[in-house]
Length: 248
Image (cartoon, helix red, strand yellow):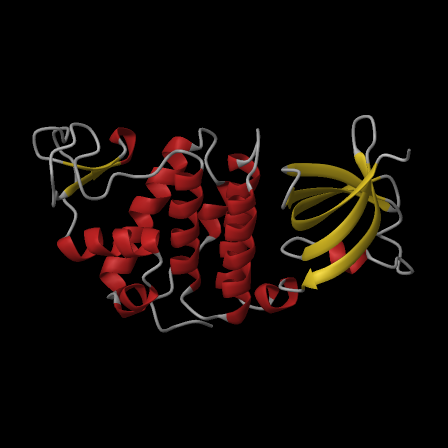
């Protein structure tokens, strides 16, 4: 029996291999993170090279290899790359999302992680909301699915009921004044509410947020993600902040 399998995937990144091949790292719906060789895809005559670029969603047929699988077929399910690549804010946000997905799913991915990433890339391609807000919401939700949900209502350290006005990434989120280390930065109430809206997907509230609150929330989300992902998300350095309503 030939060890082949079919799955839906999001392409996270690619690496050149030899003169015409690529190693493609993908987050799949049912098989977690998959690394496979796509033979001949760098040739102009390749039948499916364009379907295996970063941010693309595809239905693939894979042959199970000893160390790396082999892509045998690829049919496009979502061509988000083109609409993302022509906007700098979408492109950099998408890179940060797939890098986070790559890191968060080192061990075992879930269907929920796959669907969350597909939904985030789809929203970026459509330009429905500010790109940085889509990224912030994705990071909070993806980390929650991985067991790192930030505490945003009760104190993340002692459980005291909120609202609280300090956010400390190392302690897990919002903390009370008794638990907050000396010198902890205070968080404006509107920013604290925005963090909850980003996590829950309340886009009416997210889109209505001020530029100041959105920028402050982005900084807290980035700090939280960088703390929990030990090597950090390098792509975040290139992500610009665009205020809600500027979806270019």
